[in-house]
Length: 288
Image (cartoon, rainbow, N blue to C red):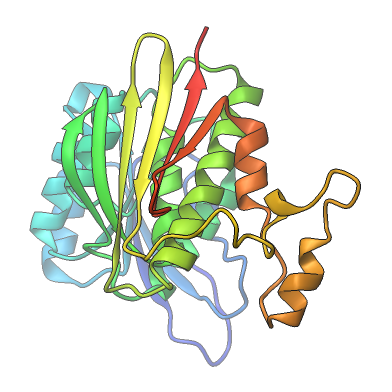
């Protein structure tokens, strides 16, 4: 049965749901009044693939069942039936290999249960409003213990990468996991904004290394780097008595509000290490 949401003066996007779970259809309840969806749901992958061969869909949300094989095979089958279609995977118990292999097959995003419906809806909106996404994340090394990628320098791609990384197991408690995710995001956005100048033709290289005793992130941006003596615009250069004094420097320079990334990272992980040039950073979180 088609599920139709009408918004006047708008062309509907076509969505395909693969899975029978009752929590899937409400994901297409748009958070934006600018989106209208016509959604078809089927529990049969065979039926879904036939539909994809006959008609162009804007987005597929696919429920992955462990008994049906790896999630990467599900994504590959969908994208073979309709090359270029965006796929968001919903999984109950994904392995790190599932998530990484789905990235290799160019899944748009990946969520495990229990998921935040608002977060999935936000990703759905990004899927249909952000252009040039398909090669935004390239996996260079798929080893779960030493994962290396490069990503295009735009913020939507950073958001997609962070969601994939959220699904990778790391043995941290929820609070520490949140802290590491915040530190990683801040430094990744710094690399994209300051190093890559938000130019989608530029790339940031990202590695995630998991050892027995630590979780390490390494980022290298394409920029010229920075000098430690030229950080008046960043909160890390402010005094403890006036932690926001850098905002006045940013205002005088015509910069946006912000500059807290380096300070946040420094407080949330165990070590933050920069190379001499200033275009590479390592974040270290010890696990014991």
